[in-house]
Image (cartoon, rainbow, N blue to C red; front, side):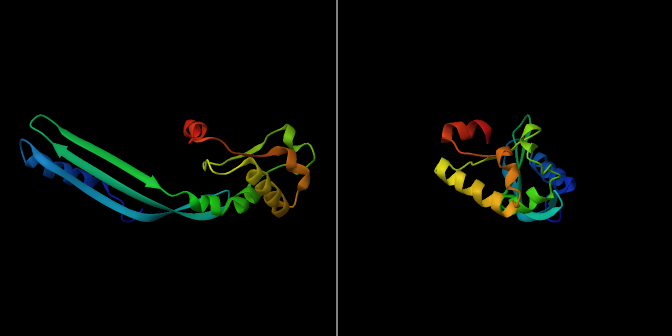
Amino acid sequence: MDGLPKPRAAIALAAAGMLCGGACPARALDVGPKDLPLTVAGVPVQIPVAGSIDVQTDADAIHVKASASGDLHAIQDHALAIARGLPLPRDPCAHKDFNIIVISIDPTETTAMAAEKKVEYLKMYAHPETADGWHFMTGTQANIDKIA
């Protein structure tokens, strides 16, 4: 992952903070976004990832906080290709062994919108006999917060 903090950079930042002695202002290293190449079910996607390392010292301790975040829209944008890459049974009883569940994390999406998406994806997937095994779900913000 070119450009993301290497352990040496984090150690150097921490050492610089400790050399201040006593209380020292906070130091931060922000990196990104950088594209992280992934392959999901045989489909290549690029996930932009950003990271940061924050260091603060006082007379007794050094505090290091590292965080990273990524934008998963690339996976959503390739959902159909990813679904096609999954080894799914294509017989009329497919829903008896497993189900595909798509959960919206947008509280403004309605069940009618989810039903339209299901029809759209099943049409593109070209195996209508598997319809009983596909579930597109929506929910309130409170319920989305519980799973997201």
